[in-house]
Amino acid sequence: MASFNKVVLVGNVTRDPELRYIASGTAVTDIGLAVNDRRKTATGEWVEETTFVDVTLWGRTAEVAGEYVTKGSPLLVEGRLKLDTWEKDGKKNSKLRVVCERMQLLGGRGEGGRGGSGGAKPRGAGRTSGGDHENDQAPVYDHGPDEPVGSVGGDDDIPF
Image 1: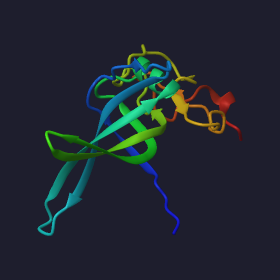
Image 2: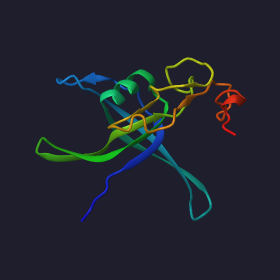
Image 3: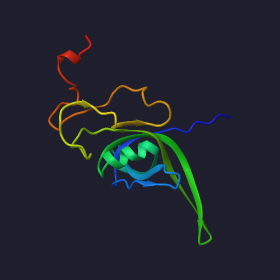
Image 4: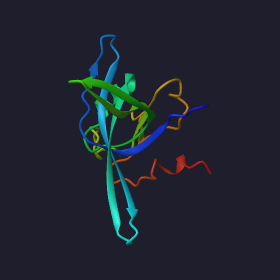
C-alpha cells in the first residue's frame, strides 16, 4: 500500500531559534510553531484553539531561520511528520514532530523578523527550500510596515 507524509503549517514562532552545528558541519535548529484554529461550537460560540508543534530545520533552511526568524514571526512550514521514540527510566516515550523541507517567511520587515523597514524588495533569503526546488518559485517580496501587501513597485511592474 502506498503512503504519503506531507504537512503544511502556517503559524507563529514560539521561541527564538538556537542555531547549532552537528559534527559533520550541518546546521540544525528546532523551533516551536503555534497554529491557531477558530471554529463555531454547536451553541454558536466561537472557540479558538492553539496547537503547538515542534519543527526541526536542517542545512541552509536552519541558517536562514537563525538569521531572520524570531519569536512571534509568522511562518509557513512544509515538511513531513517524524515520530521520535526513546526510553527513560524504563518508561517508553514518544513525540511527534515536523521535519521541515521548505519554509517561507510570511511577515514583511518589522513584523516579528530581524530585518529593518524598507520598500518592497525581492528577498532570496526569505524563501528557502530543501532539495533541488530552490529556483522553482516566484520571488518573495518584503513590504515595509506602511506599505500595502499587494504593492510590489510602480506601474511598470504590472504585466498588462
